[in-house]
Amino acid sequence: MFGLVATGIRRGTIAVTSRGWLFGAVFVIIGLFVVWVFGLPVPSDMLSTFRLSGGGDLIQLPNIPLPTQATNLLLGLIIAATGIYHLVRGFARPNLVLGLNFLLLVLAFLTWSIRGGSLNLSGLLESTLLRATPFLLGALSGIMCERSGVINIAVEGMMLMAAFVSVVATNLAGGNLWVGLAAGLASGALLAAIHAFLSIQFKVDQIISGTLINIFSAGMTNYLALTLLTRNQWLNDSHTFPALPIPVLSQIPIIGPIFFDQNIIVYAALILMFVVQFVLYYTRWGLRTRAVGEHPKAADTLGVNIFQIRYINVIMGGLLAALAGCFLTLGSVGRFNNLMSNGRGFISLAAMIFGNWTPFGSFVAALIFGFADSLQIKLQILSSSIPSDFLLMAPYIATMIVLAGVVGRATPPAADGQPYEKQ
Image (cartoon, rainbow, N blue to C red; front, top):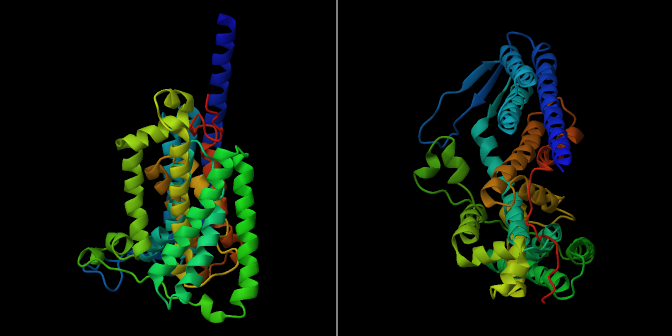
C-alpha cells in the first residue's frame, strides 16, 4: 500500500519536473528566437511607433516611438532569462510566467511588424473586443449547457443558422434590425431545443447530436444561400447596428473607444457575462444548475428537477450562441456568407475550457482569440512581410497554444456529457 503511494508520488514528481524543464526550455527557445529573428536583422536606427489616441479622444496621448532592434533584443533576453531561471530554480506559478512571456512575445512581434512605421494601438484593442464578442457569447453558451451536464458542440451550427436567419428576416421586415435579431435568436433556441430533446429525452450521444446540428446548419444555409439569396440579392443586404458612443466616457483615451463606443450586441455580451456569473454563483437557480452538472443523483434526491434544469439551460445556451451568430451579420458585415462562422463556435468552446467553465475566465480567453483575429487583419492592412495565409492561421494557432497549455488542468463538471436516468 505504502509502496504504491510512494510510487505515485515519485511519478507525480517526475511529471512536474518534466513539465518544468519543458516550460524552461520553451522560454529559452522563444527568447533566442526573438533575438535572432525580430532583433538582430533589423537596422539599429529603425523605429516602431505606437499611437495611443484616436482623433476623437478627449485627451490626446503622445505617440511612443521605440527603437526596434534594441527593444526586441531586450524583450528576447528577458524571455530567455526567465527560461534559464525556471530551469535552475523554478517559478512557483509557471502559468503566470507563461502568460507574461506570451505578452512580451506579442509586443516583440508587433514592434518588428511595424518597423519603420506606426500602429494605432487603441484601434487594435478596440477591434480586439469587437472580434472577441462572438467568442465570448459562444463560450457563455457552452458554460450554460455544460454546467448543467450537457455538452453542446452545436454552438457552431447555432451561430451559422442565426446569422442566416437574422439577415433574411431583417430584409423581409423592411430593414427592421430588431425583427431580424429576434428571428435569429428564435432559430438558435429551436436548434437548442432539438439538441436538448435528443440528448435529454432520448439520451442520444451528445457529441453526435451536436454534430448533426452542425452538419444540418452548414448544409441548409449553404443550400438556401445558393437557391434563395443568389436569386434575391435584396434579401442579403441589411444594415448593421450602429455604434452607440457613451458621451464623455467614449472619449477617454484607450479605454473609451474599447468599452464605450461599441454597438448594442457588444454591450449586451459584456452585460451577459456579468449576468451569467451572477446567476451561476449567487442565485438558487445557479446552485441547482451546478449541482445537476456535478452530481445529478444527489440533486434529484433533494427534489431538483434534473430534466427541467437541463432543458432550460440548453435553450438559454442556444439563445447566447444565436446572439453570437447575429453579431456576425447584424453587428458586423450586414450580409450572410457561406460558412461565415468559420470555426468560431469551436474556438468558443476552447475559450470555455481555457476559462475553466467560468464567464470571466472565458472572457480572458476570448480576448486572446479576438486579439489574434484582429492582429492578422491589421497586419494585412499594413502590408506585412508575412504571407497572408500564415496570418489567417493566427486565431487557430492561438487556439492550439491555449489548449496545449490547459488540457489536463482544466476540470469540467463531473457529470458533463452523462445522460441521467431517473431512479
